[in-house]
Amino acid sequence: MGYFRQNIERAEGYQPGIQPKRTDVVKLNTNENPYPPSPAVADVIKNISQEQVRRYPDPISSTFREAAAQVNEVGPDYIICCNGGDELLKIALQAFCDESRPVAYPVPTYSLYPVLANLQNCGAIEVPFDSEFDLPAELADTGAALTIVCNPNAPTGSFVNVDELAALAGELAGVLLVDEAYVDFGEDNCAGLVKDFDNVIILRSMSKGYSLAGIRFGYGIARPGLIQGLMKVKDSYNVDSVAIAAATAAIKDRKYFKETIKKVKAERKRLTDRLRDLGFDVPDSSANFILAECSNTKAAEVYEKLVKRNIYVRYFAYPKLEDKLRITVGTDEQNDKLISALKQILSE
Image 1 (cartoon, rainbow, N blue to C red):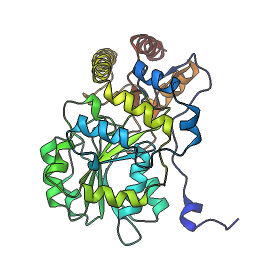
Image 2 (tube, rainbow, N blue to C red):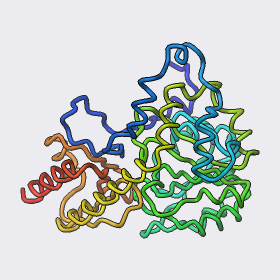
Image 3 (cartoon, rainbow, N blue to C red):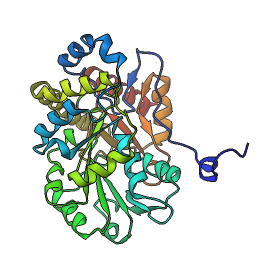
């Protein structure tokens, strides 16, 4: 048609995981938490008034900022709230990148990064991980305006220790955004770096650890100077009243959150062990998913055979990932169905 900018015409767009309409499937492909959110979330949603719905929401989500600040031991002015972590990524690229100011990130990683770079019409410098998914030293020398490190990384589940990322932040002339969407399932996090560096942004998601994927709520942590600049870029009312109330209730219920994380970690270990017993090569993961390498059969074929059994995992036809399946940690029942199906497939 010729109406769109050339970069939009060329773009394929982000390809999300399949969202099957049926509810009786085993859905282990998009890293949702298999357990429900805190009961406090349902309580606050039930009590949302018509007046709250009639009015615009708080443009800076003050109640959540205060709750998140307390959890992360910073001031509320260190917090920005977003319509999912993906919006913070989009805001960051809009704020820091253009045709002469590229973004850099190690690969393979979250496949949304190059999509957003294309939409922003900025360069994307992709620095390959090694076979162990260690942080590439070359990442410090790209000259990028924005460097993104997904940690724990998607889709590998690997984790770069905090000291390495602190060293990277100190070497960069631009901004370092640490995408910690999955960090609730790890053993450490980089939130403390914002106290030592004025060029660090931490991304957090309420979708995974807090079971709020349907609400779409995320937030960033950074020095107030960075937050003020990011606030200029976000939509006027980017987070709705229901989402603010739900996310605030969820992050305040620390007891329920810790119990849920403990269950996911226990199932992650059990699933990892059982997959290894079947002959899959499964590195340890710091996320709520594992990356299983198919050594004796093609990953794409296993994926298709699982779909026929109404079991959904994720397959990426990308370099270093073609022989692997990313599998979300489900409930014990879901994981058992997956293992049973894989036994049948491997014996065919």
